[in-house]
Length: 216
Image (cartoon, rainbow, N blue to C red; front, side, top):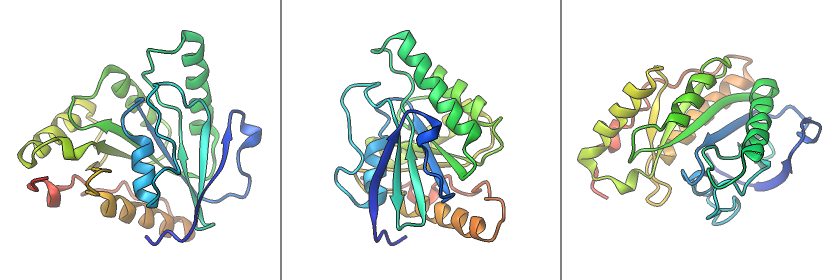
């Protein structure tokens, strides 16, 4: 994917603020500090378009990024933010749920999980709920560079067995630019299907074996 233009379009707290032009969207969701902002910046080849925050739960809005005037990447508030109040957590959850249930241009959900650890309870609960939405999901296993090559496939297997949904898993490293090309390939395939009024594929074969033996 050649990113000719990428801009932060808006941060929305109410559905009435969502863009209304019908461009296809990819939603990124995951625990706070899982590396969403870093991944978005790497995908877009920008240093700080998506803001990286050191405070879990600080990002409260749904952030829309307009790419090539053709589609959007959507950054959803992180879950698992113990540092914020129960009321705030409930508000964030409702905001996320409303978007994922009601957003018509949404064509794929990217759930980010830290590859270094087995999925946590809220990762599992979120994934189980995501599988009920009827939107294709790809599990993006972040921080691939933090593991040696020999540990990547076993870590992917743990995620696969824990979530037990059959959705594809793609290990990536925003820092080392590993798996980014494969992720773009999946998104481009989805966009092509959208343009032809076809349903996106599930993205089989994205476990990332081509990179499993790399030493970083």
